[in-house]
Structures are given as C-alpha cells and as structure tokens.
Image (cartoon, rainbow, N blue to C red; front, side):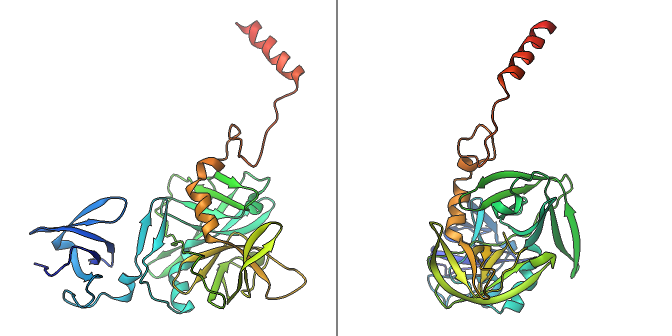
Length: 315
C-alpha cells in the first residue's frame, strides 16, 4: 500500500511509461482518486509504479519519478499544456520526440508546416498557407518500432480560420487515421527575451528541418499586431510550424521573415493561438458565420428567378 500522501498535488507515474498529474482526493485500499482538473480518475493501485507528492517532495514511493514523468502533458480541454515543473532538455532530445507531431501541409498552390494539438487529428497552421484552397493534404512521419514511416492524409477539413491573426485549424478525417502524437502549448507571457528556442518545419519543402536561435523581443509590432521576434532561421515552407522552448512547449507559430535580412524571423505568440482555439466556434469555417474569413455572395437575381420557376414547374 502506498501511504504518506498529503492529499494535495501529486505526479503519479503509471506502468507503461504513462503518468497523471493532479490533486489526490482520496486513498482507498485498492485505488487512488485523483482530480486532474476536467475530470476525476480512480486509478487502481496495480497500475501505479511510483508517486511523487508535490506538496512534500521528499515523500517518494519506490524511487524518484524520472524527468520524463515530471514533463508529462496535462490535458486542458481541446489542447494540452505542460506541467509547471517540467525540466529543460537539449534540442537533440526534444526533436526525437517532437518530430512526428510536426507535419507538412500541402495545397495545389504551395506548401507550409503545421503541428497537431491533440490525438484526434486537429492541427494548427497559418491562414496564408491554405488561403484560397480547399484541397489540402497532410504529410506525417509516424514513429514505428524506432523507424519513421511517412504517410499522406488527403481528407483534411478546414474547421476554423482567423484571417487577421493568420491562423487556421484543420482536422484530418481519413477513415484509417490513427491517434496522432501531439505537442503541448506553452505560455508566451513567461517567455523571456534571450531565451533559447527552436523551430521545426519544411523550409522550401525540406521536411523535418530544425533551426535554433533566441527570442529577440516579445512585442515586435507589425501591421497592428504583436509578434515574437527570433533569430531562429525561418524560410518559405516554415509558415505554420511550431516555435518551441527547451521544455518542448509551443511558444509561437512561425509565419514570416524579413526577406532582405537574416536572423529576423517572426512568430505568432502562443497565447493568441490559445485564444483562437478557445473561441474556435466564433471562427468556424461556415458561410453562415459572420466571422468567417470568406463570404460567398448570393447568386444573381436572374439565376434565382429561373431556379424558382423551374422548381414550380416540377411540383
């Protein structure tokens, strides 16, 4: 039996390398009841490997929780966020796990990048990547037995878009699509100037390209919007891809650079992405939605009159 918990915040390392973070509500003989924010879980003790009592760090069972468990993702509704005590890691370590979460977005007019925000196939990219396009395909690299397997998904639906924020929410709807690996969203408010960041994307179609730099400023104003400015190299094809911090969180969405200079890239702050996702119904891709980026006009009156007359004749 595991004892000594303070009935407070805890990180529960499960078997099979999974973990749960939340507030321990009760300890039973054969299970532990945990509030993880949006629901309450009853976890059988047979499935628990170790427990870290966050309120009392010295209170461990069996062995300290590994860094991987401390960096476990916490569901926050439609997207995920990282635990506050997640440690920083090297770019090399992070890229090996994040690579399959970043995708290439293809349209007849060009290509860009994107990233999954949940396992159900919802992903973020830039509005300008799919502007004027409805035929969209997604290239994903799945990790299978230590190897990367490339797969293309062609049933992609536009869920929501915000033309002015340059953001689009897509969803892969292929019938045989698996559960997708996804990335957690960070907090651009606590991001520091000078902090190291890196981008993953497909500049000029070169998939899975990684570039690293620092945050130059968090409040670069351009065309009435505030952007993160970074020295991370960004090129055409990176648009819509994630800008990560060293905890593996998305802190921005890369969307442009100054073409006549180097080391001047820009990204949409992740807090703006969260606002877009939390209010995605207001930006739904629907002609009846007044906030939709596209408006389709009614047919000419002559066409409407002819259609009405034809309908009357058939009755």
